[in-house]
Image 1 (cartoon, one colour):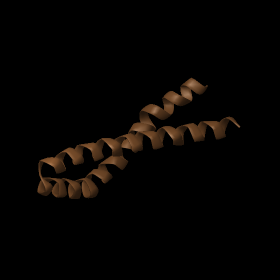
Image 2 (tube, rainbow, N blue to C red; image 1 turned 120 degrees about the vertical axis):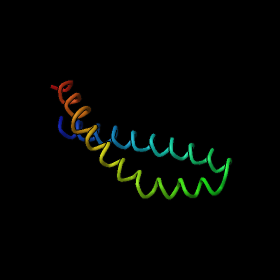
Image 3 (cartoon, rainbow, N blue to C red; image 1 turned 90 degrees about the horizontal axis):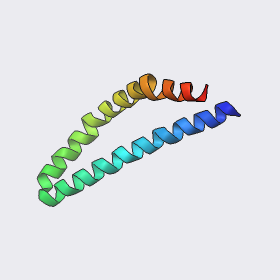
Length: 76
């Protein structure tokens, strides 16, 4: 039971952080689109190609080295 609660909590936190990052990027690109459509398209291409790769590395490193041991320490 404890492991089920723990895994659901971790996946919920992970999903929440991903949704927050997506929302922030969406708001940022929306303001850019009001400024210029060309800049919006180039930034959108950059976001889809490179930033997703950076996201996965950043979140995996961040979770494996900071949040996961902290939650484990709190639960134990």
